[in-house]
Amino acid sequence: MTRIYLLSALLGIIPISELRGAIPYAYFKEVPLFWAFLIGVLSNALVPFIGFVFFATLHTLLDKWKLYHNFFEKTIARARKKVGEKVNKYGLLGLMLFVAIPLPITGAWTGTIGAWVLGLDRKKSILFIILGVLISGIIVSTVIYTGAGIAKIFTKTVNI
Image (cartoon, rainbow, N blue to C red; front, side, top):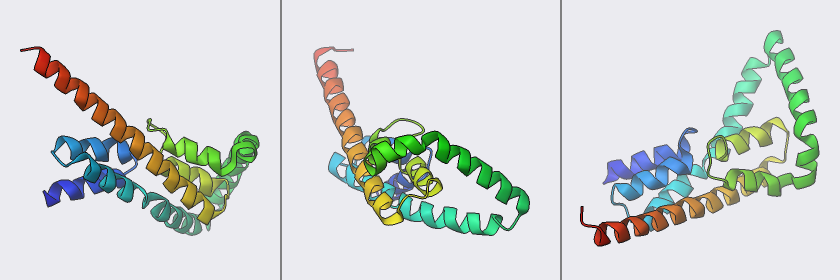
């Protein structure tokens, strides 16, 4: 059982799966939904802390290279110009909602990258990313609970 908890936590941290992988994996390995939710949300809530440190460290190391520096500055300027208006309009609430949507290309990693690239306040960003993770965890858990309930209805009423 410890192996399942650890794998669930790992799935919650890695960018490909995040909560969309951690919670269902644990639940379908017979971990109670509450614990699957808790493992997924707590592990995914570590992402902004890990991400901000990782991106800042990697950027500091790579920024010494002129090619990287020029590419990064052009890319960041373009990104800030492209989404700057939306960030000013929706701010951290928009970041939270973006993280909260449990779809591919959304989530804590993408939210952390966006907050870091756009130079948003780190502490506030972390708080709103974690709130988004919590909402996403509720959505994923609700879908699993509802889907499992519907599946039970069909398996009891239809003898296959």
